[in-house]
Amino acid sequence: MNDRVLFIDDAHVQSTEGLERRIHLGEKFEGNPVLLCDRKWESGQAMLGTVLKEDGVYRMWYGSGVGQHGNNKGRLWHMYAESEDGFEWRLPSLGQFTDPEGSTRNNVFLDPESRPHQYSNVMHTPHLGPGRRYTLLSFSGPGHHVRYSDDGLTWTEWSSEPVIPRFGDVGFYTYDARDQLFRGMVKRYLEVRGRRRRIQNWTVSADVDHWTLPIPAVIPDEMDDEWTQGDLDKASEIYGIPIFRYGSLLLGFVDLLRTTDAMGTFGLNNQGVVDVQLISSRDGETWERVGDRSRILEMGRRGEWDGGFIRSAKTFVEDGDELRLYYFAMDHPHGAQKKGDWKRAVGLARWQRDRLVGLRAADEAGELVTVPIPAGRQVHVNADASGGQITAELLDEAGTVLQGFERDTCHPFEGDALDHTITWRSPASSDNHDENRSVRLHLRNAEVFSLWFS
Image (spheres, rainbow, N blue to C red):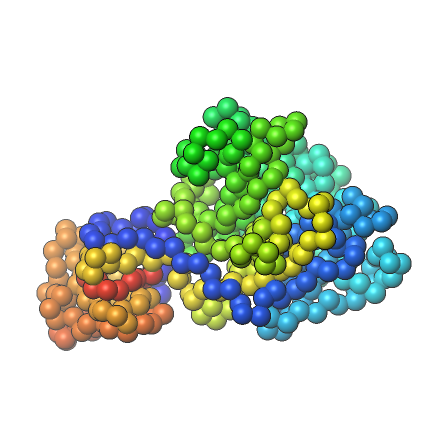
């Protein structure tokens, strides 16, 4: 089967007419939150790092952030949780470190003395060989350091020198098995339109020990600042971007911090809320904001457990035909962590496969033509035509409709399916040529999410 053509960007789109790109919010799990960070020594700004599914078990690595409780003030804890279904989580007793209550019956996998900061970027890396089945990257000032593990629970010491020196305390990393590269997004500050702001920089590594110099990748632009209406005490910043491979695309969840104290004390822009938006790339260097930049993950109402601050994990988990994204949230804005007894927890949002973004007929009818792509014997679509219909035709590389694959011989699709095979009445449809073909879709009150040949 060929790569699915995703309509998150226009890389495989030759032309459209009467269509609009729609971003679909993740559907929040009705049982949220799935994990509470409610122990006294977790009273700081807890942070979700990584969730993986391995051999039928969900595994979560998360951190407590900076604690504010007694002797734990300013200390950093990193914990581990497991689940069979991804909904109900348990905290196994690892017995490795003594917690602030004097017990080793806890789920701590890194202690404060090792000084990891914020994000547990855990990657499954068996290709690195024995002792390195798992790789962890995290900030441990003044830079980002690496550790290794065979089980994801017992880790080597931090690298003596940072593998990425000097850059900011927020970094997200992934291993891109398709390109056989480690990829990262790290934070730094940059003067942007007269304000010192957080931006994101891309970097890559072949072996995780040697990284390219991080280069600016995503900088807040004027569209990001439209909400400020010219108020100089407000600004947008790119706080962090978890990135990951999804089919032919690299995707990221942009943490867009809308600060309300952009000219604050000592130039620290801290107070504000975070919107989670989608971003995409084909090469890991040039990144495009998706669609109209509407939220991909919705913040709760003010006063709810996720009504003040919301950020995603490092990647989502593919579970059958479902995409699951775990996210960390608080009931207070960023920068207000020390002002009360706030709630912190982990929640879950879900999409059906490929249904993060779609192209929909805006005024009842629309048309989409793909660029020529390697063809096969059958054409498949992931689409919702339950309120209308979709018909298709095949074109050669010159744009000529192939005989037997005309629109009026196509059996209309009028349902909702993650995998629908388009058919034509002509017997020729069973003998499609293995050459490059374009597909022209005609949509009426319908939306398409992906397309592929088999």
